[in-house]
Image 1 (cartoon, rainbow, N blue to C red):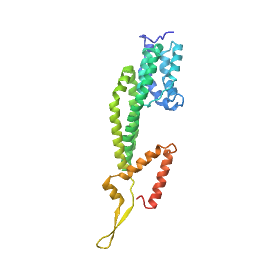
Image 2 (tube, rainbow, N blue to C red; image 1 turned 45 degrees about the vertical axis):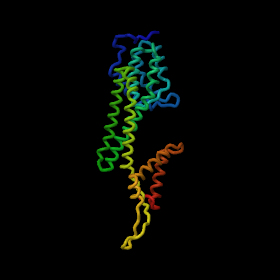
Image 3 (tube, rainbow, N blue to C red; image 1 turned 30 degrees about the vertical axis):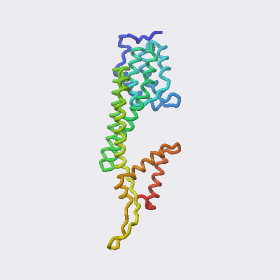
Image 4 (cartoon, helix red, strand yellow; image 1 turned 60 degrees about the vertical axis):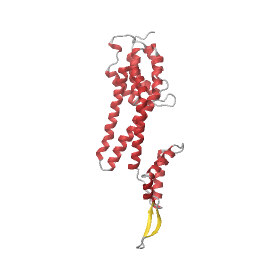
Length: 281
């Protein structure tokens, strides 16, 4: 059975702004909520696309059934960047339907890998390091209004996701392919920026000092002269103690048996014990 949506100029098969908004809302909540080990985000992807598929294939139950089965397959990418794929996918469904399912499969499988790397860099490394850490640091300094910065930033991230759905639909497959190809340089630059921000935050937020002192001798007045290990380390590499603690934590988190909760417990115990025996100030 041919797809009645192909080459159709009637408004019955044209996706509207309301349809794209519904796609945005469903895709926002479904991808991770429906996650499973077999298809990962595949079930959530299909659920988000169902209203779009019902409208495009409203006169073709057979094609609707094929489309649903097509989108139940494996899918996994960064949730925010998936918005571009959703929008472009909706445009392909409307333009070609089930006459070219390989194009739809190629779009999803070809973009979910590159977009996962782009999204992880932008929305996880950069976004969290800049907004969350900056807000936490200013709140610790007494500016409690900075807690609203994270709320505003989260709404901004939702707006970006909404915009990407509409942009992906407007430009179809072309913008998605071009975006994936041209984002390599931007992703590398964003990664460098994220590492720079994290490095600066280590020195400003992680407050770990050693209390160890070495006996040197006495001065002319007979007073005991000690050398602080912390001052000595600061003269060699400033903030080397906080950096060492972060590197050890990073190394421990790479172990299979280590979890964030266990690491926090280890840090609390090490801080208490270390302070009482004179290692940490």
